[in-house]
Length: 619
Image (tube, rainbow, N blue to C red; front, top):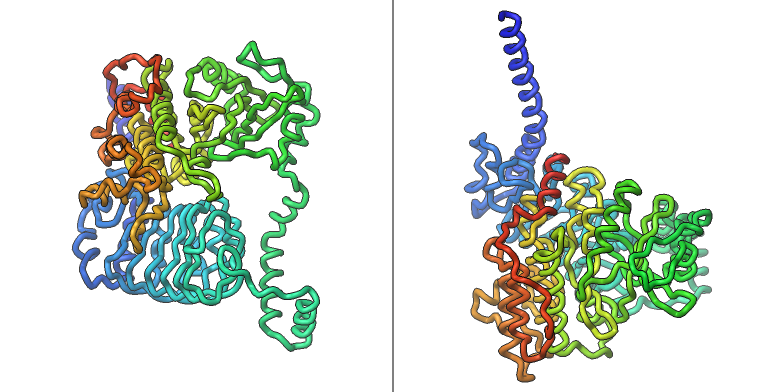
């Protein structure tokens, strides 16, 4: 009896001790985040008492800092800071070095304040996981630090309306995730590095900048350049010598990257490594499709040459292939998946059985060494994104009946995945890039079911940073708090696609917004709605053609999809029914294969439970 009692007491003591150790280890990061915010408050002058009145550290409850003005946490009950947004607060001082203690920070907005001094040269050490950095409309001076190129997760970088000098570091053009970059209204000089898809507005009001998309730099002949360099060598032109030094520095710093490119000019070195596996069969789901081997895919895609790439995203890279009989198909090379061959084949068998008129048909798959290749039916008209946001102005904008047809068809496909597919599927990666268009412009949803094949690199932090659940411009706001994908999160993402259709604007850059507007498409729509001017958001190309009432109804449905509280958003089935009613006179849906879904809650969805379990394990 005594032994049993003692063993029980001993077990309790051990359990208590272990729990104390666990609490200490869990709270360590919280202490660091608290110290981070204390340091920020101490280092900045706060003339309007925004921080002094809200940031009260006389509290020891879990998650108390998450209620501070401008602070967003990974979870409301955990002192781990996700974003800091302190825009337009009149704050004064230099860049707060203490921010290094916010170890999990992914977003920092200090715009429209009175901060001064230089941007720290160790910025990548202070903010290793930053995806959004907005330091615009301040008084920062000095050079743009080259170390920003080491912030490899950056999606948005805004440095406009400051007093920055010198050149734009060429290394910044190597940031593969960078979608928005602005240095307008500074004192910058020299050539603009090779940034793709950026307009002149991003570099305007810098008298010394030249090169695309601004006016070309003053041309100099090869002989003249040689003369200048020769003169510099004997001490004639110091600036040219500095330029050569900078160029050499860039070269040696990125020598490994350049060497890799030289060794792999076609970007298909990985495919050449499959030489010994050419005889592997492609498992086909469609009996009507001829049997194929990996060698057929290699030949059809020119060994997966970069010239055959037709799209790329979080799930992988898509290539166009043409078989010997002239049949076109699409082959997706998946990003790394840690699933075993058996698990992968099982997932593919499930996805191969998922068929619907608004889903891109999965024809087959192939496993070769570590590579995972999916074979799809070819979609002749590419992505909705490419058709809606035209790069070539010579192409005609999409007419309203076609946009409505795409909206209705895509909604039908997503509603089927949510409510009628067995097992039900949350897409998690909805954007205008995942909606493809066939030869008749019928919308077909791609990447469905692939989110479960993509494994986080390390923890839930890297999962978020790397856009595990979709393009950041489409992610529902509640995901940052819960890290759990839900059907209502899909509805939010699809709502942004619907806004793109009716406004013609991009999710994170609103061309029609007034000067000084720094928000995204949803924030712009919300602002117009609050001002009673929602109709002003409609694409002017569509207005005045006898469909204004339809446009406004469509816009209201889209706006309801992006409401902040998930419970206030409609279900995907309701979205489809609403859009179908708007397009009734066009006869888009002569045959409606969707049945009324049962009354289910988000928590009943199989995929959500799986994701919740994965997040819990990662934590």
